[in-house]
Amino acid sequence: MENAPAVVRHNELAPYMQPPREIVADATEKAKVLKDVVQQAGLSRKLGGNKEYLEFEAWQTIGKFYGCTPFIEWVRPIESDGKLFGYEARATVKDMDGREVGSAEHQCDKSEQNWRSRPNYALKSMAQTRAQGKALRSVFAWVAVLAGYSPTPLEEMDGIVDIPAEKPKKAPPIEDPHAKALKDIQNCMVKLWPSDKQAKADFLTAVFGAGTWKEVQQKTLYELKDVAKCLKEFERHYKDLQDIQAAWKATEMGIDDIPDFSKAVTCPNDGAEKCLADCEVCPDKEGCPRELTSA
Image 1 (tube, rainbow, N blue to C red):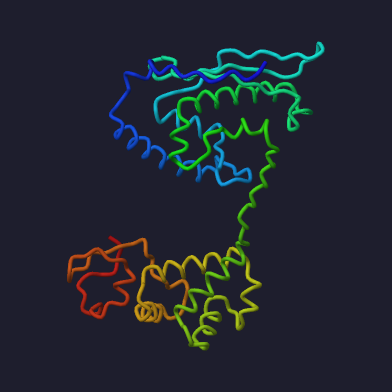
Image 2 (image 1 turned 90 degrees about the horizontal axis):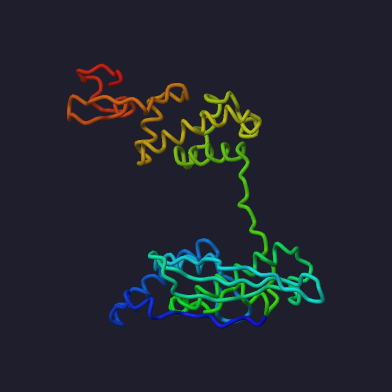
């Protein structure tokens, strides 16, 4: 059977008619949102021309914008010489009140190059997908065009052109946790002592008991992560380089002496909530009437 033309019952849409300018303005806004959804989810494909073709899920999205959903009315087998050759299907589009606003029929059979060796269930499924996409297109093609896409669903083109298989997306490289911990420590050391090699060496000795960076690289991930976490927390609390250096100096180079940033005290001088590290470097700490205990 030849693909039947799509049918749109305009009288069913009459209750929703608006002034033309409002219709276009509303559709333009929906088209912008559609484009964002399509780009984020990768719901379109280029087939060699300037226009991209929307996948069925994108057409469903347009339908949802207008409160419409596609439904399969029937699916029928197609036979040739007494053998199953493919399937044809009819779909309708209904609004939230159950009124039919569009319909279409489509098929998928083994005469198509991409479907000659596919299992029967796949042909049946594609016939339904094409019918639903075509039914949605019959009502909402103009919205897809406003968004800059082709008015023809991608699945319909599968029976006309050879759609290349999508290349699998490369997963982002997974950074080695041991290397990441070393990198975090290096970055913090550079911020603490930009050009003071001796200070860096003293730090490695005090914290790791190591005289060289090569020795530090031999440390376990657990040891490195613990130090990296402390350093990053230290750096995050003190944004200004001079404050970082002054606060670090107050700890006398021992990693165990880094203040607990999770604890806070109320400063008797200004009433502000501050962490214990602020008290450690406060110029008035000697005369402070409050003991350095957590609040």
